[in-house]
Length: 374
Image 1 (tube, rainbow, N blue to C red):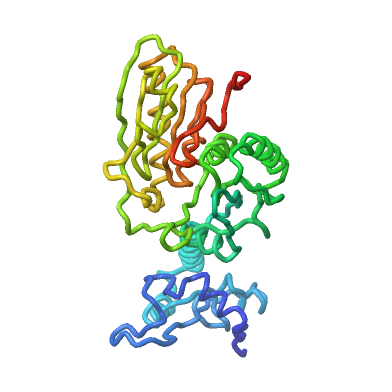
Image 2 (image 1 turned 30 degrees about the vertical axis):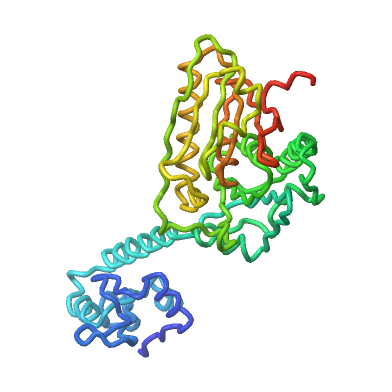
């Protein structure tokens, strides 16, 4: 009786399932064992033989079953000879179990190497002399650098109307618009998983953005390099460390000051006169060496969010009467978003965010309990 031929369309599928290696000994079959020359050194073996009298032949199988992928194994020449010369030692059930274990292990490994799907948010608000834009190619390249892939067709733009903040008095209105657009985003049926954020805007708006997104389980905030204009980060840079400093204490105070000197030092003379005259408890988060690249490393945002959360709890624990924290930020864009995500109005109910323009800080935005009328 003639041997049932192997359907050649099954061969690439079998190679894929076996990852190009023998399904018994795991040696690669795309190279010769002795000289390591590249080529096809595989054998396609039948578990139940293709013709009567062959190893493990099963007369009850149909020709289609004999030629199916489930009855085929990718083997090296040595293992093929071994199982066919010793059919009593290598039963059909044993070979099928080995094949299944091998292919499931490879499938599991490939699943672990898949890029994680994420949702993408853009928030670009021009201010000063700057004009911001980011192409689809730029943010997709940045996702790829972090082993992420986009789950949809378009990034959700939180500034679709193209508003700008060149007039600083517009920031509270822009914050209200941001709240509306975040609410619209929440109504979308986006896939569960990380949310990737690409944002450039005045620091108070970035902090507000982080606060609005703070309940997301995984927020990945990308930093645009000032030198190269890219969003991919630089994992060759040293991961930054952060320091907490106490400059002034005052028992029973209801307000306190937190300076965020990450991308540069904050000169006391740039603070509003009333802040200096009030002599409020004053704290600072800084880095050992202030630099604009403090957020370039992919771990910077995660590290900073944890540090900022701990800092806010520490301020509350040491000053339980403080209900309002005045924030003076000098930070890379991404860390402003991350800091906003760390805010907790159950710990400190009110955060007043200042912005530096023309060399001095001025009150810009209140997060939490509303500001008193002015």
